[in-house]
Image (tube, rainbow, N blue to C red; front, side, top):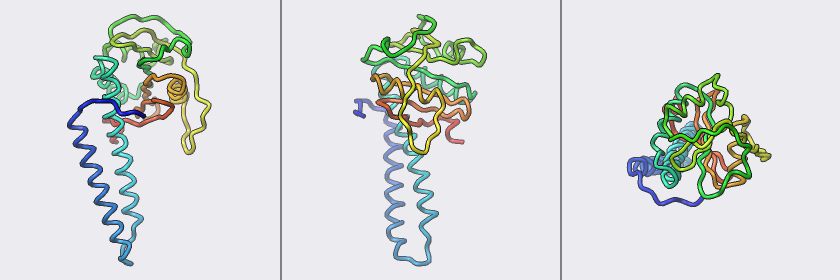
Length: 207
């Protein structure tokens, strides 16, 4: 994954601080190897948890970077997924980048409206006929809803993926699209890019 040029200083500082803490913990662990009275298992579990938290922060940082290059509404998108996460309303949001997506998507219902958090939340509200498909965003516009995406055939070891997540990965394997996913079961948020799924940090993800 190529790194975009962007500057979200608070997140950069959080990443730097997290990496420094993990480096310190690893150094302490190496010293503890010489102490027969100290068990490393608890320390390693703590380091693993810190790595997972750092991964989520890093994914959040890069998500904002990638979105800001293709839509001025990236802050609205971030707000929307936070609200969907808190409500545990499942969602699948495709942000078109350079590659045309028409060859890969089974078209749904045209929308043709400016992207707003309220409209996106309404589309994914349970019971709405459009809520099960994917929303397609191009620049600052919601182009369409209830789109059907190709499912990945890749088997990801140790992970049981639902249809939304398999669809997100599937489209990102065939194009440079960035696909946001909100889990209906857990409220956790991820994004797919270049065939990889990355968790991002939300209020819900911290619990």
